[in-house]
Length: 137
Image 1 (cartoon, one colour):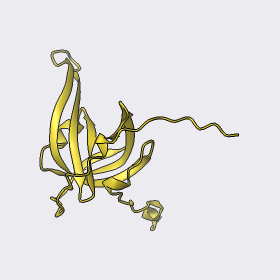
Image 2: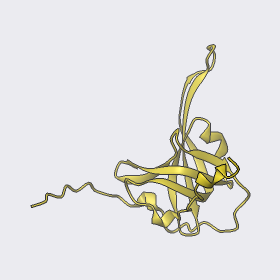
Image 3: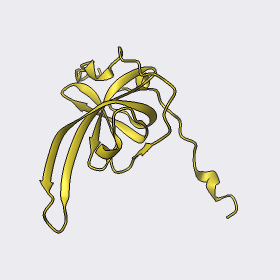
Image 4: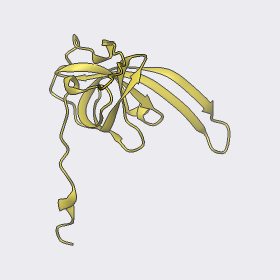
């Protein structure tokens, strides 16, 4: 029992420009460039106030930027200028473009301010992808 932490793996940090459609399990350190609330639904007057909030946040690192879809409690963490670590993030496709998301199996955590500047001329969410079926012969 003395060496119980040996089973945990060190996270492998991914850069924004390495993200590809349909991938998951990414751990990234990113800066929030801006955050915009796109949906807020629910009732706050009931005994169980269940609000659904979704914000689209432009996040990035020194290699590029991507839109991160923040849900519910994640919205409060994603303030402009904040540096966050996204753990177990996945790529969702929305209207042919990539969006970064963290579901219930991942974490969004605030960290100390990063020293890098965001590369704003490489926005991966502006690249449109098309689904192509390949028939093997």
